[in-house]
Every structure is written in structure tokens, then in C-alpha cells.
Length: 359
Image 1 (tube, helix red, strand yellow):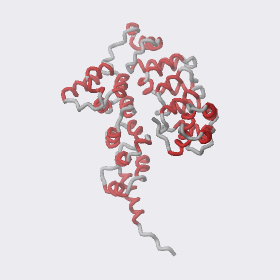
Image 2: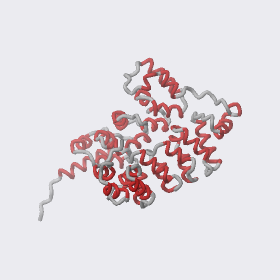
Image 3: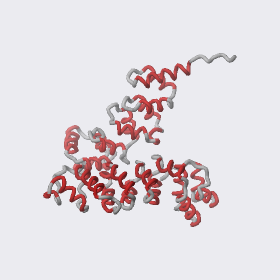
């Protein structure tokens, strides 16, 4: 269910008068770019045929300043981004923006991968997390006639080394032979347990409400995860529960830890714990710092401001948004970065400085 602003809802609600909906379908309503592309997406399914057709036409004629801003915004709902990628997959400039947007659904990227131009295909091939998280992206890239052999070989070599099998893809079989030898063509080396096998073995990993595991079982789980390939760890990060995510978040491979923080099952409590974690990986913290929804939680902003792993310019941006009580705490807290502490003191000094008498 898409969350809509009151202005946007008024113009796309099926119960609103047709003239109001038609105004939005013609892109005549002054909306921020993310809301504009969301409105047009919704109106392409409107009950009125003329509204649908108008919205579709307007979506294809949006000015660059609106498209460029809206398609890059990670706060836009994934179905909206996926729909626009389906429409624009052959236009490299916009397809690249959508492929680079972490909120664009993997299945939409996979559909684009089979027909996009070489420039977009190169960007898709560089997104290692998507390649391992959604196997169809690899399959479709291998079917794209615009992709050169070097690009496909590079993608398949990386995926094979990361534990992806894809027995139905000839290029992957060739890559296995290239890396492991002729005997690996049909039967790749033992890659350890799969995510599905681990979830079946530890049934509670499929239940978000399961109580914490007992110590012995947790140790066994850790040993099983250590034997998993990168590709299967990423699948477990996406499918498993909080217990699995808490272990995988500490994985030394950044693709695995980023897969955890981008899991559709991640909770607000886990995000806050990451923001507070001084040992969190830089790439994981970067995801948190760039997520507008998570930053609506004031506690997350405070935690990120205090975290020494957060780049100083980013921490200072959050500091400027904090209440005076937290600024005071930071000004005297010796466990925060010195730059943050210094700026907090300056902010307080400026606020408390006596105003010059007016002449």
C-alpha cells in the first residue's frame, strides 16, 4: 500500500472528480518530482480510460528536471520505480538512474537486463549484490544481445566464485570450467549448505517471532553459516529472521552485511542498533544515513551523530537537526568525535551569546 500525501491523494483517489484526476494525469498539479511520478504511475490504472491514456502520455513526456530527480530518489515506492524502468529500459540515461536506485525492485532490473543498452548493462553487471540476490538478473543479462562476451564472462566468473550455480545458463557452465576445470561443468565443487537447507534445519529462522536460540544451537548455526557461499549468505540475509540477520550483519564480506540492512524484513529496532554500533561497516552505515524513512526516527539521527564511523560532514548535518538537550549532551560527551563535540559547543555558545544592543 503506497503512502500518499494529502495533496497527492486528492488527485489520484478513484473517488475524486475526474477533472481533478485529469489535472494530475496532465502533470499540471505542482508536485515534487517523487510525487509527480507516483501520481502518473497510479493514474495509469485509473478507472477512466481518458485519464489512463493521458497519464501514460504524460509519463513519457516528463521534463528531464522532474524525471532525473524523481527516478534517483530512494524514497519513491518500489512499484513506481519498477514501472518506470519497464517504460524506460531502452533509454540509457534514465535506465541507469533507476538501476542505480537501491529501491528499484530486482525483478524490474532483471526484465531490463535482457533488453537494455550496453551502458545500462555495464551498470547492472557492477551491482554485485543484485546479481547474487536475484538470479534472474544474471540469466537475463546472458540473454541480452547487446552485451559483449567480456561483460558476460566477468559477471559469470564473479557469480561462480561467489557460489551461484544456475545450471540452466550455458555461460555459467563455461565459467565453472574456466575456474574449476572440466570436471566442474555439471557438478560444481561443494559450496556448503544453501540458505533453504539452513532454514529447514533451523526451523525458527523462518519465524520473525521466534524466541532467541539457546547457546548450543546458536553455535551450530554459526558453524553452518561459516560454510555457506557468499551467494547463499545473501539469500539467508533476505529470507531469514532476526537471529540470522544479527549473525550475518557481522560478516566480513560487505555484500552480505549490506544485504542484511537492505532486507525487506529489517526492523526499526535493528536499524537503530546498527546506527548505535561503533563497529558497524561503513557500507552498512551509509545505507542507514541515506534512508529518508529511517531518518524520520529521531533516535536514529542522534545515534548516527554520535557514531565515530559516520563521516564527519554527515554527522554535522544531523547535529544541526537535533534538539538543544541532545546538543548539550554531545558538547560534553568525550566519547563522540571531536569535530562533533566542537561544533556542538559552538552551536550552544552562539545560542547563549548575549545579543548586541541595537543602536
